[in-house]
Image (tube, rainbow, N blue to C red; front, side, top):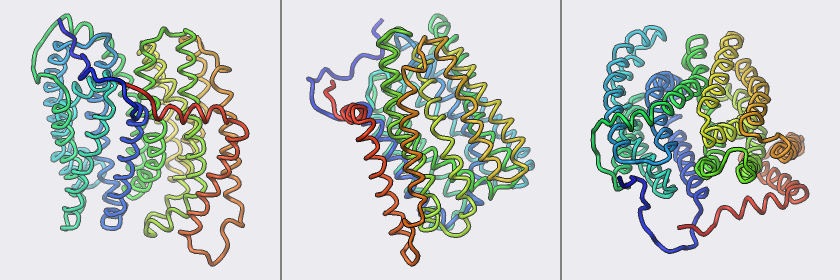
Length: 488
């Protein structure tokens, strides 16, 4: 049988953007578009509607991200992807989407009553078809990732988000309120499905094959279990905070966590996504596997540490010049969540190594640890307020890191000395940079906050650049060289 992952073309070698660059372009464009949309919609809607929409998307997103992304991960992990794998995936996706859609509709009244908001009930009914759209994209997205076609994935993502954003802004300006956010996500998902299938030479086919399902089943059990735990870890804070503190606090938390997501999506995930594909071709524990993993950690640490700590230092100025006073109580929460980012970035690197080494059971175990510790942390801290909950999440992220270090050493035979020295050195440099930004003479009285904000960014860049020049010059040169490369 001919594999479904044949190369799309056999063009000659050419100088082009690398895979890491295209994933970075995709993530940066997504976040820039989100910031533009938020800048337009936030003054119109305020924190409340964003909080309500975030609560609804906890339930809708579970179906989309856990099962939809889980199917993509299963298809990527397979040694060889064939057309029957795709047919079985589409069949199972359709059945799962139908069942989950009915379940969401049935749960909507109870969820609305729990949070005392009728908009939640109506939004859940309106967005119940979204899981089907996400499931239908799984097969073509997996094929594009396996074939390292990150350029096509980037263009698909950017175009669909732009279309959805345009629709949402139009409805918001027309007085649509919270329904502008709903229309935005629906248009985006419809565009994603159409563009994804137009980008691959796959037949849209329903079918059943017991041998192919049996091949996918053990991978799927571990991947889906891990996705459930990862999603619970990410979304439990919103549910608990929404129930204890109300939608406005959830809106503030959603924006605060978005800044952490921006750094992760733009500067951490691109490198990890490509390394995840590259690592799967190497034996776990081999010298080559260790070298590639170490290079991934190096690249992530070089950019994540200064961006996370630097963003925390300038967050007060950003809030004042960008948002109206309703959002200002979220400044401290945003700073605390950003400071939880360095260990989280390393956790994502460890997850990529476990999946590439075909250790989905370990991936499931670590995801369970994340979910359980996050839920316990928020349940204990949320009664004391939003800032207390974010501080507790910060402490938790650092506390669980040694567990990952120990598992990586035992399961992949990679010692911490091979990859942790440079990240710790870079974290120290980023901490010095952030401390320098807090010096009072960078904020003279009578100077416009916008000029102060730009000045702080320039000072931070110069400080960290000088540190890298003195203590990580070779690593910085190797990182920059990966963004333009020869590829097919």
